[in-house]
Image 1 (cartoon, one colour):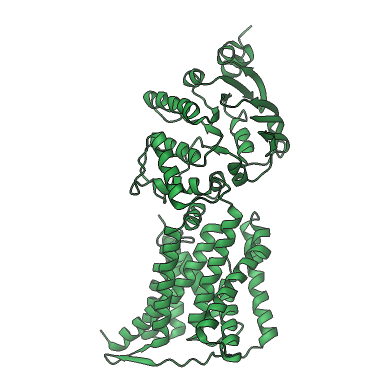
Image 2 (image 1 turned 135 degrees about the vertical axis):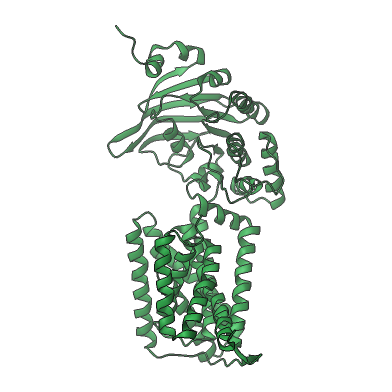
Length: 284
Length: 241
């Protein structure tokens, strides 16, 4: 195999780890609360700004800044649920889409108002690793590994704790969990906090590789939604696998043509698959 | 124990439950019967908190519970099973029941205690309590037992059993009826039982209430219900003149 193709594939697998983390968060929220957070990638943008200001502007040590950013975005997730999602929980899906879509424009416009449209970088310079004449981004390697650890921690939380069991139960049948004494509203809040924390973690990992600006969400938002729908909305394992499939299509497409065409190829693949398997690749 | 007064539920212009009142005594098994669409399941949904009443009162041991959310009604001591079992198929058998044991009461309990209660409930209904038994692939009788085990794991004082015999063969029906009887005698749980299969129901219940078009048309002993002209008319139609 061409060494440059292999390099592109490995680098995209590494980016796929962060996309998988975002797909897990979005799928968790959709699976439990049954509302698609269109503004999810823009919540990531808030986390990236939080990290930028804490670390690059105020000199807070990076691990502490990351922790504060994750907690902050987790709290933002709860606030979004209380103010935007909870009032439209029983509304038609179109109204829910408009509400979360409105949040997207609000966050982008508000960030533009506060910070301008400058591209800002947290300024962490990590080396490029050379391995068998291939160049691998160390930042992406760290992001991939932390992303995988985050996914494993989420899996263990959902599998080994009672609140995780309640989250899995509510994702299967929300109408009857109350009869087992489970407070649905509390589970929604916990889920929003976890979804927010995953967005916060992804924000920290992406800030190592990308500049932050008010429209950074547009870079990832459509791809994350494509991944989630491809894996089957609400299907966490499907979303996890789909993030690597899409990453590879973009990597291989980019290798043979350019990045723009690789996205055209990925979205064409997505549209064709939606005709064949409208409920997603991994729907049963 | 339970006092239901002038309970009404309206869906738009349709009155599903109309001024239904009854009382339930501690330790009693009350049969709630009626043809399809008579309002039995809606009455259950109102008592269990799945639906909010349009008007009326439901008091459990003197405490008003009408309109409370389902989880609070569960914490007050009411458990419920469904006519068509609704297990969490992606959770194991023991996970289904420990979830109910853990969250079923307002106070926090330890994991060990939740597991012990779940194992006890599964044992009571005759299902295995090991960690490997999956919910997917369970037969109709086992799923009905799982419904009961989940309800029992919440430590209810009142159990609402919705058509526990549906889909079972004759032997399984007799066993299920005996099980409800022993839940009352061994655990002291009061039961309201909605059922279509009269023969088995009449053998176990102390009293029956008959609903038709959302209204109570009879309340009394099972033997009286069998000969009451209003009840026979509802089930068999009016006699020809």
